[in-house]
Length: 426
Image 1 (cartoon, one colour):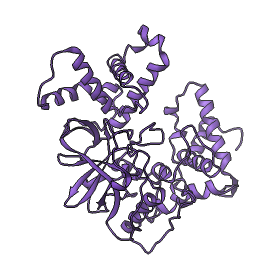
Image 2: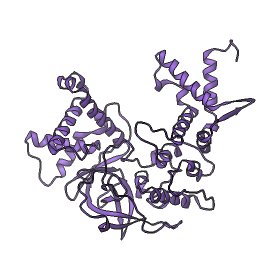
Image 3: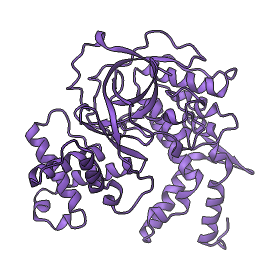
Image 4: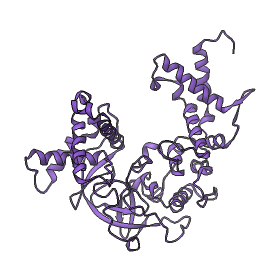
């Protein structure tokens, strides 16, 4: 390029390159992340892919020094910029570089990237990432003799049986779409907005609902079968669900969480109305708020500290707009900052179409939007959080993961592993 080109010309050229269809191919991430020297051939030019990554980073730094926010950077909105970030993330995994939240697992990679790439063959939404499987677990191998549905079910079963974890159940679409795949399998063709969303993410803190027990398959999975067996217990039944649902982000967190709308609804359906005692109402509101934001209190916190923490969480919710001017905030800035972050995390959960529910035993929870009366809350071995299943005779369909008060940390699990029930998921 000559000196006669303007900065706008350079920018347009970079954007044009980064929006080429090549960057959206499913196989690109694996090919580039595994290569010690990834090269790109563009027209008659050959250059190191990592140089393009450095160029995007340099461009963003220069733009920020000129007062342009990251959200407004057109270069960073391109398909290529996203793919370069994915490649760097996967390269770190290959090199065993651990980020602040821990090493990425195979399911994390599929969740992040499989839904954002394009593949001529739908099976490649999974097969294109098999090089990043967790070791030394038995490897899932590509099998193009299987139908798409059979390949997705086999991959889902292999991930669960091989890892001993049922985290994948947080991504299933649930029994709202029961005839495309078994309810326990993920359809990787679906847009991300059609998938479930996990509560037990890597930064999910201390959640340990099954008390550290892992998923153990009683029998090997038979390819083509709609049934997979899990172990655990049914602990409650959903009695009612709130009609309040949020699917779009609102800049005001309170407009996403909608605590007092939920408070009024739950108060109306209680067998006995709440007394007008302010302490009782405050405690009840704090309890509901903790469920709405899936608040992580940890198993080691005393009951007195938990009550204080919940009341402070409610204080932050009620004073979000003016929180930083409160004297108490100035004295305990880090503590209240963490509480505010917990609320913002709750907003992220809330806008993914989750519903508040109450159970037969008058406990509260937060689950997928398609839950309904009669669904059961379960502790499944291998799942860090409770799950909601829908009884279908003697078998069950998976609805998804949930937050369920009093059962998030394993301290309520009072059965021995050998005494767990076998539940057949279909």
